[in-house]
Amino acid sequence: MRRFILLSTLGLTLLSVVHGQSTETRSINDELSVKKFSLLADLQALEAESFKLEKPLALAVAKAEVAATAWTFDETWAKKLLREAYELTLPPEAEQFKLREKPAGAPPVLPTGDERARAAVRNQVLRVASRDHKFGDELIKLGLEKLGSYETHQRYSQLAYQAAREGDSETAGIYTLKAIETDPTHLGPVQVINEIATRDRAAADKLILQYIDQLRSFPLSYENQSTMRTSFMLNMLVYPRPAFNEQVTNIMPPGVAVMRSYVVYEVERFSKLDETLLRRARAGLLLIWEPLKKYAPDLTRTFMELEARSRMPGDDSPLPTRQSNREQNAERYEKRLKDAFDAGVADETTVNLAIAREDFERARKLIAKLPDGAQKIQFTDIVNTKEAINLAARGDIAGAEHLAEQLTRMVSLLEAYPAIINRCRADKTRVCIPGLLVSKAVRQLKCADSTPTAPPAGIPASVVPSNREFDPLLSGLSKLAGLIAPLDQQLALEVLDEVIAAANSSTLDTTQGRTGLDTELFRRLAPGNEVRVRQSAETLKDRLRRIVALAAVYQGKAAGLAQAAKKPTLN
Image 1: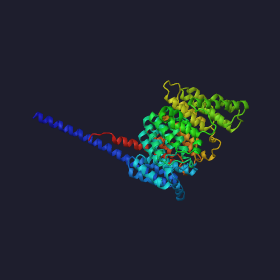
Image 2: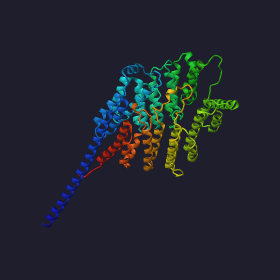
Image 3: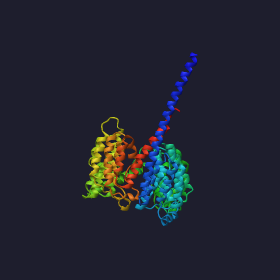
Image 4: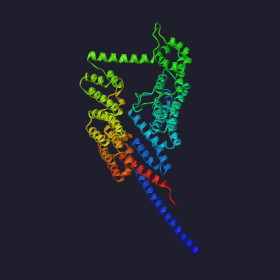
C-alpha cells in the first residue's frame, strides 16, 4: 500500500513538472510568434513606405533590403520582392537590344554613370538572391536574356568575388566558372582566383586549369583585343602580384601543373600566328622562355623555331633571362630618375614609378620639383598614404600614424587609416589604441579635402565618380564605425551619430540607389542597443536611407529571433 502511494505521488509530481515545462514552452513559442508577427508588420510598413520612392533604382534598393530581412521568415515574399527589384534595374529596351547584340569577346567599354548605378543595384539584389543559388542563377539568366553576355559575366564575377572574400571558395569557384563559360576574355575572374589563392592554392590552381581549357575552345581575336586581354590575364594568374589588387598579398605561386599548362597553351597560341603577327607578339613570346625551361623543356625546339620566326631581320640579341629583365628594368628606372634629377624637373609617370617601387625617399624629392598646386598636393598625399600602409604592414604603427596625421585629402585618409586601425587591432603588444585612432581619423575626415584623385594622363575624367555618385566623408565615417564596433560599442555609436549627420547633409544622389550608408553597421550595432540605433535610423531625412537603415536594424532582429527559435525546448 505504501509503495502504491509513493508511486502515485511520484507520478503526480512528474505530471506537474511536465505540465509546467509544456506551459513554459508554449509561453516561449507564443512570445517568439508575437515578435515574429510584429517584425513582419514592421517590414510590411517599410514596403508600403518604399512605394513613395519615385525612381526605379531607389525602389529596387528598398525592395532588396526588405527582402534581405523577410527571407528569414517568408522566402516566397522575399523572392517576389527580389524579382521585382531586379527588373527595376533593367535599362530601356533600346539599350537592352544594343547590349544583347554585343558578342562574347568584344572589348569592354567605360560605363556611364547610369550604367554604374544600375550595375551596383543589380549586384545588391543578387547578393541577397544568391542565398538560394538556383534562384540567383534564375535572375542572372534573365540578365543574359535581356542584357547579353558581358552583363552576365560581370554579375557572376561579382558574386564570385563576394563569396571569395567571405572565405567560401567552393561557391566562388562555381560562380567563377559560370563567368568564364559566359565570356572568358574579361578580367573579373582574375581578382577572384587570386583572392581564393590566398586561402586555398589547390582550389585556385584547379580554376586556372579550367580557365585555360575554356580559352582553347574560344575564338580569340587580335581585332577585338581578346587575345591580348587573355594573355594579360594569364600572366596575372601565374605571376600574382599586389599591383592588381593591393589587398591581395603574399600569394603562393601556382603549382607545376598550372605552370606547364600555361606554357603549353602559350606555345600552341603563338604557333597559330603568321609571321607578321608573331613579330608583333615577340615580347609576349619571350615571357614564356624562362618558365618553359623549367616546366616544359620538351617544347624547347618548338619555342626556338617560333623565336627565330619572331625576330626582325638583323636582330641577333640573346634571349633574355629573368635576371637580365630585372636588371634592364632597374637600369631603365635609375636612368629615368637620374635624367629627372639632372634636369631639375619631374613628371607624373616618374613619380608614380618611384611610389610603385616603394622608393619613397626619392619619390618625395621628385615631388618637391613639381610646381606648387593641386598635383603636388595630391602626390604628397599619395606617397604619405602608401608609406603609411607599408609601415603599418611591417608593424611600425607609430610611424604609420605620424604620416597619416599629415594627410589632407579624404581619399587618402580612407585608404590609410583603415589599414593602420586593422593592424592596431591585430597587435598583441597593445602599443596602440584603436579607439584613439578612430577618433583621430574622424576629426581629420571632417575637415579634409573631398576632391577626388585625378585620373592618370590619358584616362577620361568620367571614370572618377562625382559627388553625386560617391560621398567620401559618409563612406569613411561608416567604415570607421564598422572597424571600431567589435571593440567599443559606445564609440561606434558616437561615430554613428556622425554618420547620420553626414548623411543628412550629403549631396549623394539617392534616386540612383546610392545611399552611402554601410547598412551592415546598423545591423551589427542594433543587438547591443536597438532603441538607440533605431532612433538614429529614424532621424535620417532621406526616405531611401531611412528605409535601408531600418531594414538593417530589422535584419539583426530577425537573425536573433531565428536563433532563438532553433534553441531546443522540453515538450
